Amino acid sequence: MTSMDFNDIAGQEVLIQSLKNAISGNMVANAYIFNGPGGSGKRTLAEIFARAVNCKDPDNKPCNLCSSCKKTIAGANPDIIYIKPSGNSIKIDQIRRLIGDISVKPYESNCRVIIVQDGDKLTSESQDAFLKTLEEPEGNNIFILLTENYNTLLPTIISRCQVHNILRVNREDAKSVLSGLGLGNDEEIEFAIAKSDGIIGRAIEILKDKDFRRNPKEYEELLKVILEGGREELFSFSEKIIENKDDGIKLLLFLLSFFRDILVIKDDKGSEYMINKDISLNIIERYDKKLREESLFEIIDLIKQIIRSADFNVNMKNSIDSLLLRVLEV
Ligand SMILES: [Zn+2]
Image (cartoon, rainbow, N blue to C red; front, side, top):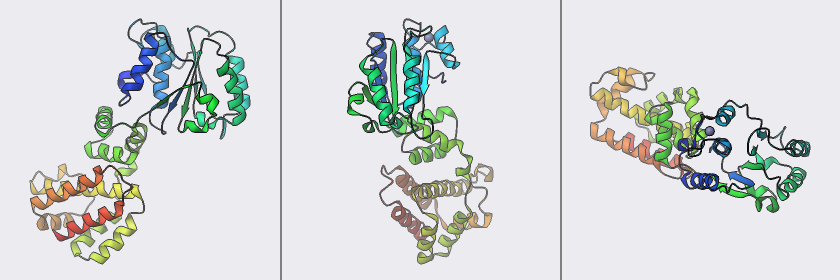
């Protein structure tokens, strides 16, 4: 279990305030739905909430220091129960077993918290069984259903839960969270945010995957094609390397770092400051000779603009093609 607390969650201020108010006002609901895409932090938030509900500190919940918090962080709190799919779904046997387990009082905490992961995967039978426990609240049980699309649940279940949507984190918040984790440099973080659509968990996965930093051989080929100045070749080549959005962003990130490298060379800062050490010196020198500093700044701005453009589903291939054409011209 995580030892993070509410302050570590970015971009969900309204939801967090409402959870905190519920705890301090003794108004914790019987059942919650935390809805949001995979990697958006639903589970982390549920775990922090579960810890806060039983924290013994009167003011700062979760304190992470009291016996209850410590036990929960260590994953040794018997009053926090996880339900997750067995195979493709959460089956009725699992729900029946759960109902048996929670019919007695919590072992040592005020409340027992049941976190249902992949709540969208409750079968309809399971939902029927589950509904009965929601209709007759046992008092000390708090249910948290984590879903990606809660509309797949029975309306009768939804109506008994307090529904909260986990919002996408804006670029600046995501950037500050990811920078704090020290998983990459600014460009890599920018790339991960763009690729993950602002879903922090996914961005972290991307940054942890070292593979995305390796330059495919085609990139060097592309740089040569641009130098040779053939428009037709350029477009058929970009066709080959950009099959989808991910390819497009990856290429953009490469171009951004490549042209920054050329700036570094121009400033005589020495090659140890270069990012793309795998591109041949000959190509780097030719670009250095061809491009004036103003053109480099213009290209870099253009690339940043495309990376930042909010909707990547807008034809990215076209934007990249016009970018490459611009590079070829200057
Ligand atoms: Zn505590």
